[in-house]
Length: 224
Ligand code: SF4
Image 1: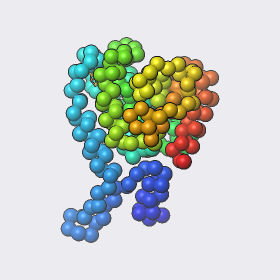
Image 2: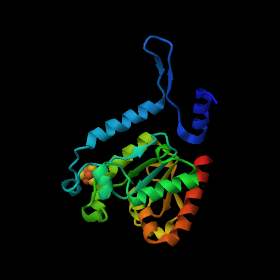
Image 3: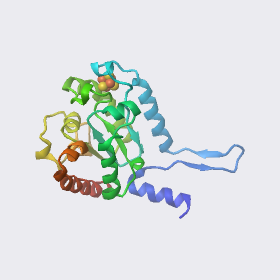
Image 4: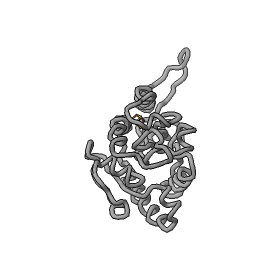
C-alpha cells in the first residue's frame, strides 16, 4: 500500500488528515494537513499553563503533566491526576496502571498507546496521591476542555468516577454507571463512556472482565 493509500485508510479509521511531505522542489515542498496544526495548537496550549499556580496542587508538583498521544485519535482517555511516576516523568499513565491500560488498549482496541490520546482531569499530582478536590478539578477543567476542543474526539473514555465527575459535572457511582454513554455537556456530538480506573482493576482483578466489555463497546463506538 502506498503512502497516500495508507493515509486514506487511517483517515477512514478516524485518525483525521495525515501530514504528507512531498519532495522534489528545492528544500522539499510540503503539504500541511491538520495533523501538524493540532500538535502545534496543543503545544501552544500547554505552554500557556505550564507554570500554572491556580490551585494548591502547584506547591508539591515536579511539573505540570499534560496529555500525550495522537491528536487525531477518535478516543481520548481521561484519568484522575498524575501519580508519583507521572509527576517525575511528565507523562500521564506511565506507572503500573498505565502499563495495564496500554496492554488492554492493544489487546481490545488493536491500537498502540501512541495511536490514542491520554490525559487527566487534574494536571498536577495531589500530595500522597489523594483524590483531587472538587475545587482543584474546577480550577483545572478549563485546560482539559480546551484540550478536547483541539482534539475533537468521537468518544471521551472516563477512567474512574473522578474523571467522569470532572467531565460531566455531577456526582457518580462508577460501579452503577460503568459501561454507560452520555453526551459531553460542552459538545453533545461527542460521547462520554464511563468505566473503571485501571488502578482500581489492579486492586480488584475481577473488574477486569467488565473493563474489557467497556473497551469492546468503545471499539464499536469509534469504528462506527
Ligand atoms: S492542577 Fe491544574 S489548576 Fe491546579 S496548579 Fe496544576 S495546572 Fe493549575
